[in-house]
Image (tube, rainbow, N blue to C red):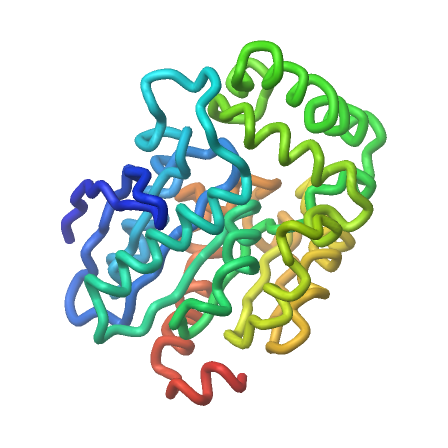
Length: 295
């Protein structure tokens, strides 16, 4: 099983750094891994290798401004959070489809990666999609008051302020993972201040986009995730009105350890959490096309 780096064009031509893991044996299908905010693709490499070992060609990639898709300087680099979905995720899915036109395609989204799926996948020829710790970015769903105030300060205060002052957000210093393009932080902060997050942004059309999704959706949530609480997940998944959504809410004791918001993709869960996801992907990949859309 081999992994090879690729440069994939977003739909506007921006070059995205990506990695392709080739499936062992006869492939069941193709999986594209859509990352979380400020999380570089290297975090998903163990998971991608696992999927490849279990029969799926697997793509990971970095959004523009992050990791292998970062320009020499982020100062005043033009990028919005919607670009990660509408331009970057879309471009990678098209590339994967063109490379493997004969195989079933699936998508896995982590946090904001699930937003990309919801906004775009109605137009993707996929057998199913998985959302891991995906939620609306509205801090009112955070239960712990201290964490709620911290997130509000970052998303609606310090983040947008730093973006306007220096042209980007030093995310590594602020506990946001990678540094973020300024436009991403500004749009993220604006959405965080809306009652229904980006569903209230009339320029995005998120409600209509989610309504058009007909592919089966599997949703993972974790009891110890401070951000993707069940209420926050519900606020996102309620907009999948024309498809079947399966929810899996998991306690640390079931997982075999603390998961939180980022932990699902750690290799320690290769024997507890990952096999169930692989089984679901195999079922969806094997389902006839009309059954996959009607499930």
